[in-house]
Length: 358
Image (tube, rainbow, N blue to C red; front, side):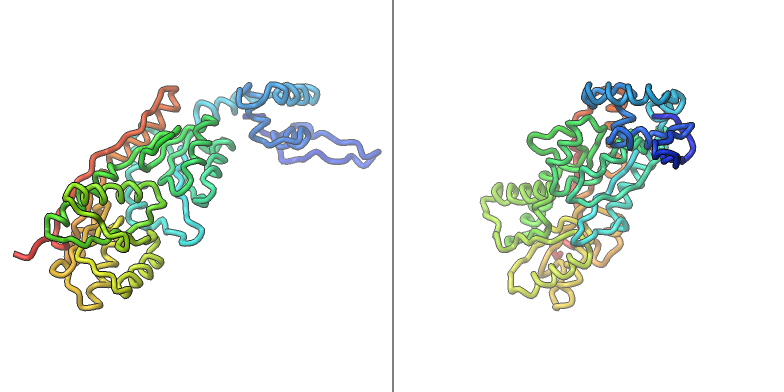
């Protein structure tokens, strides 16, 4: 961190147009003169190996020529005493899934509790899910000592790039091949398999799968759905694998379209509880009974699952444990230790929406 000072910029003195250097320089002034970013100057003067040696030397010489000194107290504040973790919730530019989604609120609460327990503050941020690498700017600018990102979305590659440049990073999501970053997540494949096996055990044979399999967690749940069919000697129907987004209004429209398409199904595995409840409402409005005609299973087991009508069978995710595991993984990295990915067990909570009629 560089010396703090007034906001004066490098200006002209009006006599010959020569640059007039402020009495107390800011990091931004050095960056402007060197033609680099503020983050580059900060890292160069702290000797960071992330900056090329030639660039470090050039910036150091410029700072020396201007009698610029590093404020060691401020540097220590950034490097050692910054107690802020950035928690990033990506948004899809097309659907803009809201932070008010029950799952986001639950996991944010779990992370906040864990950070408070360890004496850290939480900085909540959103970035475009198409530009996950933008989350790294919070670390580069010194606003946070590390990042927790909720979801991988479609850019596993960008998360790998953040990890490759040593940004402390823990991600809620599914473990994928060639992964450089640490993930913590529920066992999505097993969750999909448990839910599907339950529906098959209820005698359902045409089971619709609702979710966008371009997202890693949903893809893993779809793999579990397929695995359960294979274990029962069955093949899932491709026309019943519906690409349904998580955003509420977009999901409603897609579910309405599926129900009006003529597709025949007697079971549903939805990749969120809200999606499952929307399906129940769409079926009811068409005179289709749940669970008598169609059995429905949701995912996440949010509190609302036990209070809707009928109460919703759902795959329970261990959210409090997940929040603690994400924070522990990131703090381990900040301490210089490794943080392997973790897959947490999930379990099916059976309720009225999928039970056989007695």
